[in-house]
Length: 167
Image 1 (spheres, one colour):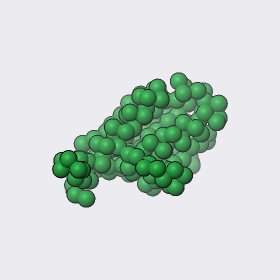
Image 2 (cartoon, one colour; image 1 turned 60 degrees about the vertical axis):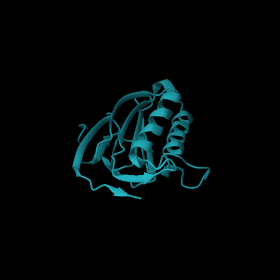
Image 3 (cartoon, one colour; image 1 turned 120 degrees about the vertical axis):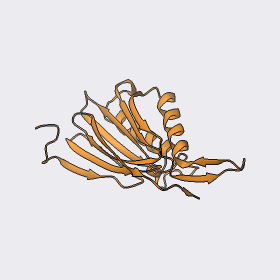
């Protein structure tokens, strides 16, 4: 099997989805302000990706946990640990968080969902002492990524400049 074997299982993640597998798979997704957190462990041959839309779960508990950065990462860690993977073995890559959706907070300043998603993901990765190998985040362009679970490789394509919208 080569890293780019076309016979590999292909999974496309939509927003608010997660996929974890021990089979060689290509997981793909398209990101704007959302972030994709990729985790893998070479020893356990376990890998996964989430496509989170918003930074905070906001107390919705079990309802749609993959929609949020905080609960998505917590779910991924829990699944890895349930397979015998220690936190120091989990390798992480982070993508997305483009500045495409603005909103106004109480302080009357414009903020972007992308920046908030990135900040929350980095905060959790650091607080959980996970190994962040690389990130490609921010900017104003979307990204399409392909994650090869059996090698840990990522192919990334930048999309043409994204139109910025206010909420």
